[in-house]
Length: 190
Image (cartoon, rainbow, N blue to C red; front, side, top):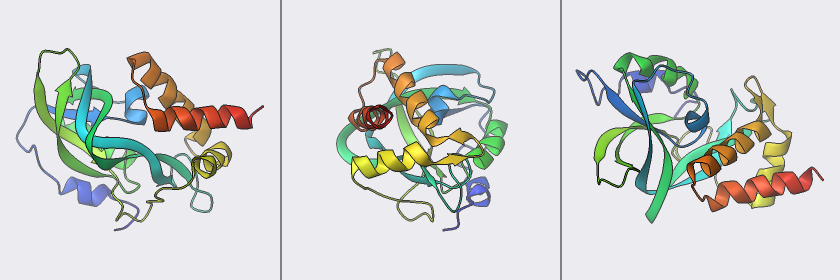
C-alpha cells in the first residue's frame, strides 16, 4: 500500500446516501476537531487498543525522520475510548487528506458513554500493519525517544502525545500505553 491513501478512501463508500455518519476518533481527532460536526459524544469501541505504532511522515515527522502517532491494534476483550462525531458525508473529503498517511476508513460499532446501551455503526480511520508507514511495536523507551525528537509540518511529535494524554485524562480514560509514554517523555526532559 502507498503512503497516500486518499484515493483508496474516496472509493470506500460504506455510507453512501446517508445524510450523517458517525466517525470515531481515538488520536488527534479527540483533541483537534478542526472540521464541522453536528454532534460530539464520548464513545468507545470493543476489540481494539491504541498504540503509537504508526509512522508520521507528513504531520509529526518527515520522510527522513518520521514521528509516531496512534493507530488501533486488534486485541480481543479490549476497549478503546475516544470521541464520536456525527458529521455530514462531505466532511470525509478533507479528513481523507488529513488521515492520508496510511489510514483507511473502516466500519466499526461505536458504543456511547451515556450508559444507556446506545450504539451505532460508524467509521474509523485505521492504519493496519500492511501500510507503508507502519512502524510497529518497539520498546517504550525507543518510542518515547523517537517522539521526543520528531518534528513535522504540524508541529512537534511530543505535543501530539501530550495533547492526547491530556484529552484522555479529561475524558476520565485510563490508557496505560499513552500514559507510560508521556511519563517517559517527562522523565527525559528532566
